[in-house]
Length: 151
Image (cartoon, rainbow, N blue to C red; front, side, top):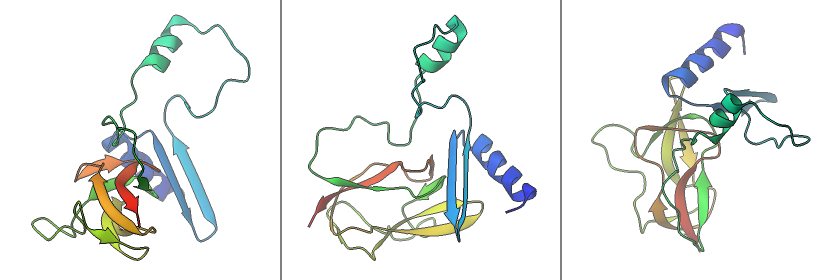
């Protein structure tokens, strides 16, 4: 991956208001973050300036931000940052719907990243219980896409 491709990724992040990009391919790994890193706890409690507290307290938008009730299902998550699509193209048949049975090899959606359409497999056996992500919207690495009831 060269500097031009990295700049394209950064532009993709800006256009889609994404704060995280993670890609692993053929022994290559890149992870880009924008803003405060909420995943890493501070080493020791530190008195933060008021401005930093306001930024850290700001709500973080996620593609799966809808309230999630306690469930017995498991989630199919996004392996990358990109745009989530439920069908191969506009007006075409959806890959899966609620109530469909899937297995490890069932294509459940496409995630477009850097103008490449990536077919996403269920990688689990079960029945689609809920569609968490909204069609044609940005998703981040590890965002919940579907909830399935294991078979």
